[in-house]
Length: 114
Length: 114
View 1 (cartoon, each protein chain N blue to C red):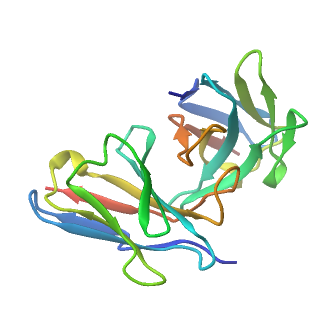
View 2: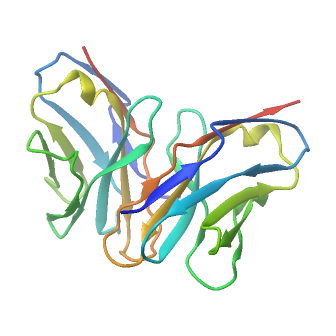
View 3: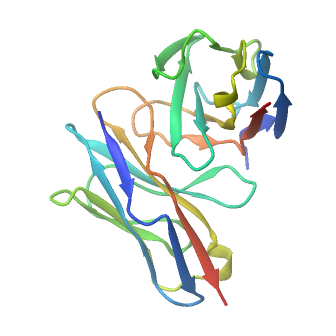
């Protein structure tokens, strides 16, 4: 079975500063990796995904993530955050073997301060 | 832009009562899912549904739960006899295909069992 750990439950950051959200996963088989964002009172929206190929993945709203197979990590970064990036961010994996279910991390709440 | 919708946004019920949570997936999608998030915990997979039958379910999805696609547009989750521990946010999702295809999430229904 696979699992996902998001190491930070909350990350306060000042506007225009960079942010990195950490995600580590555990799986005995190859996985697809995802980052979702949840704005207040909204559903989960896909930010980016890693399926194969280049380990650096670019997503919406200026976010990017890097897949590191040896460290089983998929950390999310943004070089300069805006107030509107205040949200909860979820890392998720799905195995390539079979099934569609997503396994989520616990989420990281990002609070961007002016 | 097409989106997944869910009704109601908040449901309050008494323990032991039956509840039905409703979802309208994106119209050309073929795969449907329910996830839940108990307050302060991870988003957890409940069930996936394809071609009018359950394709995968978690250990959480016991005999108290059922899913149905009663017509061409709705996808429902029924909890037969609610327990206090069923209080959670329930998310519906849909995808066009399986494999690496993105799952689109609805805004969720907050279920409170008293």
